[in-house]
Image (cartoon, rainbow over all chains, first blue to last red):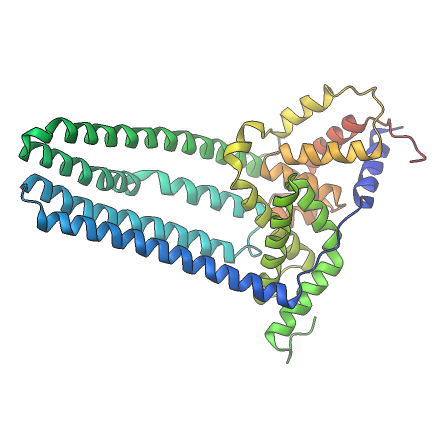
Amino acid sequence: MTDEHTVDRAQQFWLAQPTEAFRLGTGDLAKKARRLERDARNMRAQTYVAAFFNVTVWTVMFFVEPAWGARVGALIALLGWAFGIQQVTSHSRRTIDAYLELAEMPVASFYRDALERERSFFIGKRFWLRWLSMVAGPVVFCLGIGIHYRDAFVLAAMIAVTFIALSALAIRGRNTKIAHIGKQLDQLQLYEETPP
Amino acid sequence: MATGSVPPQTRQRALYDEAVGEFGNALSRLIRSYERDADKRDDLRQEIHFALWRSFARFDERCSLRTWTYRVAHNVAATFVQRYLRSRAAHVVSLDELEAISSDAAPDEAVDRTMMLERLHDSIRRLQPPDQQLMLLYLEGLDARSIGEITGLTASNVATRVHRIKKIVARMIHAEVPDDR
């Protein structure tokens, strides 16, 4: 039996395999649409709660805390976290917008766009600015507290160091992620340009 | 389908019904190939059907219903699988690696139809997205031009890859399936 014949038979088996009939009814579609809207609403609510929490905490710290270093830290944190939340929200919006063009884009382009969008979130000036603005505020705040209240210096320094260490770990995770995405993009590039 | 005075929602529903009627079985095979876990498979099925229905609000007939349906299904499935990529990443292989694996797969061993199908589904799940889609579309019986239209790859690139996929499939089952099955 030739390879060609074998492959033809495999294809026949493939097409003849049992399948499950499925169709979304009008009620299911309406339910799913409602669920999607509810999820989007919940996600927006979570973002607002996170934003409100951060704005409230750092604003209170800015006005209440007598240590000037801590007040500077609170101000940086306030601006930094607002910037971070805005970046995450706009990234999610771009992802949702792309999802609406599912059928207009060939599979390889859709896949490449998704990878590039993901990578762009983790590289470049905007990433480092986001990272710095989110880390710098709390660290400066802790140091400000430590300098002002001598007794609390060790504890404040420890919190700041822990925060920096956790941020460094996040950078490591981010490096792994962009390396993985880069590899996939390189393979896709080869795939699209030259026959193997 | 005539678009004249038909209300948009009726047209959207009619297109969805037509697509499911024509390609429902192909979608079912695609879903099984992308996702092994039964619960996640149900989620993926719902997501694909919902995305398909929603997409028909924008269907402008610039491509065929088949191309449209396959693009939506593959794009949703690939996105769905990407969510679990972190845990899957270590097991994803290229076509080259799969070729090597399939040659190691005891070609003399008799393989029955169910096992062969399971092996095919497993192999597809292990491939990286572009190869995964190509292999599925090839098994669905689409020609290189149609596959190119869906994936966005050149016909020559598709033809070369399909040639290799055929070799992999042949090695995988190696003519050991009895004729009377």
